[in-house]
Image 1 (spheres, one colour):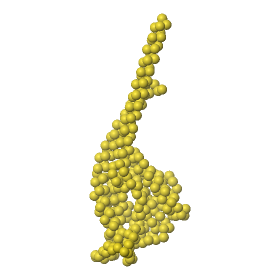
Image 2 (image 1 turned 45 degrees about the vertical axis):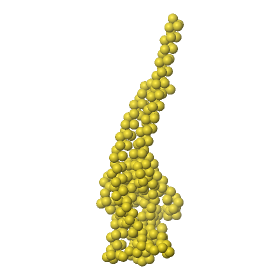
Image 3 (image 1 turned 90 degrees about the vertical axis):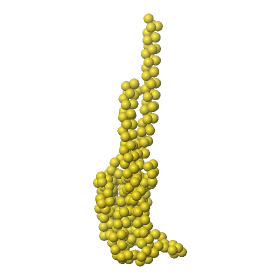
Length: 289
């Protein structure tokens, strides 16, 4: 059994850690409220735009819509979205695992041919894939320093240009979708080409009157919708990060509380044993005299 001094030092250390995790939980909860409000406001708008975009892409007359062009999947770009910081449980590790699973199961042939690249958003996935044999074409870790619509557009423009120029035939996003403070849904979705809605011939489909022209829609509305979609994914990931960190720090605080209780019980037992031994030695010495 450890001596009393060692136990006291460990109790002090665990209590200090408990104060840190408790403070981090409060900070994460405060940031989560703002991030949750942002993604809640954006989600209906982004979902409706995506729905309209998919309906347009499912039409029979899809000529000129380069972003809806369905090609043979030869070269793939994966865009994993993580955080810049840790201490948020399996939040970042799950994204890395999902990307590796996609490569192993869905894009195995492309990977063997060297046609799978990665564009990372977040320092944690950047570091993870930098240590592997994956080809990381770009890293955008700075976006989390100031997550705004204007800053996200720069990243989206790069991705759209890569697809439009024929550099990649398929671009997928992997991120954590925010559900609530305790739940994040690991999401994989096709970003480009735009996935058309399956048309049921027995049912009426939406018929849009294009005004002023389809060319304007292709050049302006579709890119704007894709920018909104990626920005919404970043907002989802941002809120999920704070939710995951708040949950992780809450659990760490509870574990520290239980550990302190156990250490204090051990300390009291060790102290009682030490006192009992001293009394026995005194009594034994008195009897010997």
